[in-house]
Image (cartoon, rainbow, N blue to C red):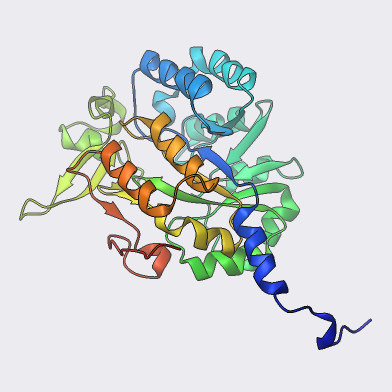
Length: 322
């Protein structure tokens, strides 16, 4: 039956927008992109399980399959600790497959029990027909892509970090799967077959001796003028500044994002997660959240938010209170 204009009550659109802003939002801790010692990583996740407000936590090696074995002995007990704390353990897969060893690693990740997050199309194919998540390393830039991934079994899709809020809205509107966005942390910009960290020490990837473990928050890279603008973590290039979308959370919720992802850094991630949880719950406003995040992060590391505004990613655009 065709609906006439008279059947739409005044204020319906405003009420729908308010519902989108106040509906319960999920909070995810993304996978660790740095190479921390196995015991430090285990204790970090134990604290996340016991003290943090994250309802989903991504485990697994995303950057380099060579270093995965270091944490494997602790993976089961960490996942169980998270489960007992009422959190979902998500097993993330490798983001770049460069050979037979990497492909075998992806197969073993896809074969795990529980929730799997695919970070490349090889993992998507292995998980075809099985409910799974899709990570931000898969190029999801349009409505047809989210529809296809949903048909293949994706129930949650974390979008790439370079999308604007308008693009997020268009994709979320078309997506049968739940949409997640990254809102905090050093953002992945590029991945290479070669290992930048090893090259910085005059070594090759095969003989790296795990030098990436020497830089807990990434190795800062500067310009010839001495301005730090990138960081490297193994074979991955990251932003030096931290993405901080606390000021844009309300806008992203109106755009249709239902989950928000924080990336682990060498900082108090329990306090950072609690700040975003309180912001999502309306216990604090964006201004207070920004102030808290500034006290919880190194002064030498700036904030960026350009991509969500359709600007260069390195930009910091001050957002008025929503």
